Amino acid sequence: MARSQSLKLLLEHSRQRMQAAERMLRLLKINEDRAKRRLEELEGFLAEYREQLVQTETGGMPVYLMRDYHAFLAKIEQAIRLQTEAVQEAHRRWETAHKHWLAERQKVKAYEVLVEKARLEQVLRLARDEQHLTDELAKLAENQYDAHE
Image (cartoon, rainbow, N blue to C red; front, side):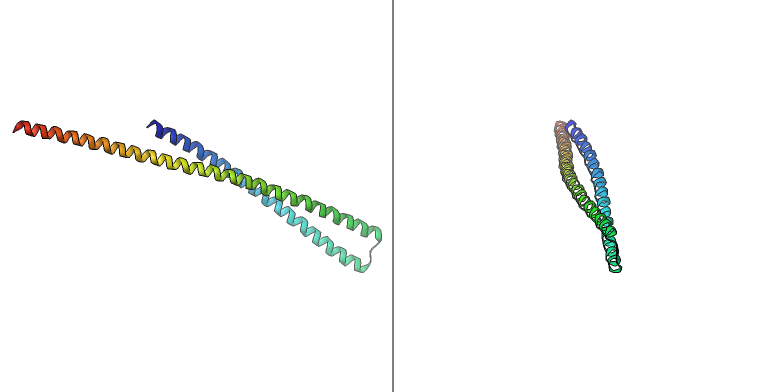
């Protein structure tokens, strides 16, 4: 009985750890998705400003304005590189958290198997005890029946 209780406590603790890992996994996925959206926005800005530059260049543009435009595009490209790194880092963190969650889930499953095994052992032990009592009662009844004859 004490073994069964200990296993149940370990199972509950393991479930709590798995749930905490799951919450962290969800948060990291949200962060990764945000980082991806920001990257997509930056890439959209870059495409939009490049298109504007092409349209403006065909109509003629002062050199200083063209230089400023190219400098601005370079800054967007740098932001895209940094954001790409941020997306990759967010994904690495999510992958690490996912591995941790999988390990915690595996522990829960292992404890569930042990708890079920302990429960079955207890059921079998009770059944053996009950059978033993039934056998003892049958012997007593047989002895009393033999004593009356």
